[in-house]
Length: 116
Image (cartoon, rainbow, N blue to C red; front, side, top):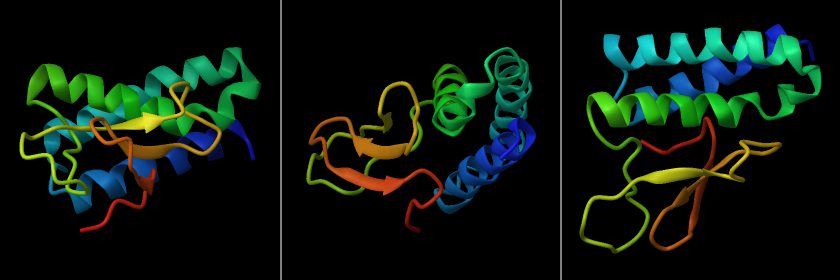
């Protein structure tokens, strides 16, 4: 897989999760595009990093949305009443990024597979 393939796959995975959580809007998609652009340079400098790029792009989008609109994606997998987010595990974004509940530690779904 080339770096460009890894970036486009990452874009598709994050976009899917934005769409199924009803968070896909011009602002979030712009944040996604900015993350892909930034990580394009990053993967050009470290080709081995392509296995980490999907999770890192998801984290970049989370950070951008936190500053702009709030936490994303929110957890619906546990019984904790207070709204809380999922996070990407492992922390470096790969090689198999998974959304995990920040409170319970439950693995909710692989990146790109959040349920409706």
